[in-house]
Image (cartoon, rainbow, N blue to C red; front, side, top):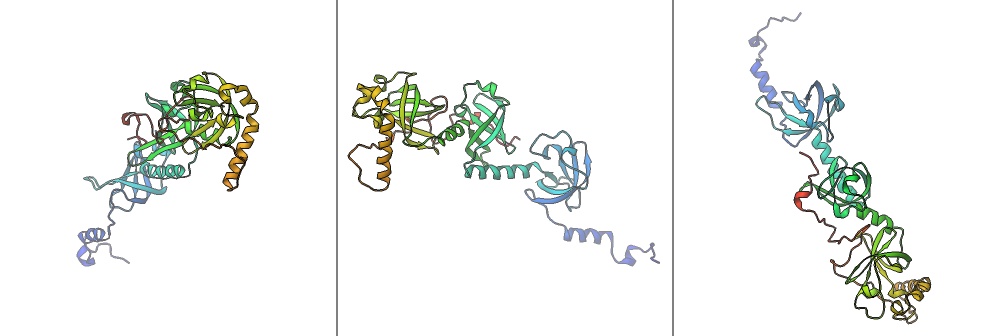
Length: 349
């Protein structure tokens, strides 16, 4: 029978010895570590977690999820074991503060970076708008759509609750910015249905000194002044008016930059026909486009073709070329026209 009245001296192992032994083998926990832990007590505004430290760690309700949590039981269950992020060092009571929210944010940033690398199109509902644009959630992160990248005739305020296809413009965890484009997603989807050398019917939506913007089924392409006719033109206004219906040929598609280049010059049976006899150009459009495609194919194969002028796509200045879904919006290296102050943080503090 064991004698339960033995003293610490008789055992040869004091309470101080036991504490020293704990200190010797105690694992050092640091902020930023991700550790396993077991829930052993749920409180009204948080929970106590056993992570193997001398004192139970604590997770407050606001750190339980990337989403809003009204009660700890929505996320945690007693005796559940899972990973936790160590948020702060020990307080005066030796207690660590934990977070699940930080782990979810880390994984969300990793996921959106992967989606951006894949040039994926994502869908998300607008939950709010501000002066600069609209707000959505992507993998739990708050994303911002600048007004210049929203392609709809609706006022921004009416977009709340509407789901939009989106492409990534900027994913920057360090600066806490997630910027997306509705316009790019729409342009890409429509561009996938178009082909270089295809003749399309469009409507003139805007005229600038350097060319005309033609709406072709909800996407605008640029008919540069140099691609209107083989003969010199002083201004596009001398050939077109806003709302004119026109036949044009697609001569370049740049899905990455969201640009469509158009031409009527390549459809002219004779130089200057766009000025002298536009109806003839439109009547012969498919025939001339077929010749253009043959010439381009032969050129790609390095063959000699019958004499005919095949004009290269005109390279225009960055400030002159724009492709939009509903209105003219200059493309400037896929950045936004929004000030730093208007872009909300992706991670809400």
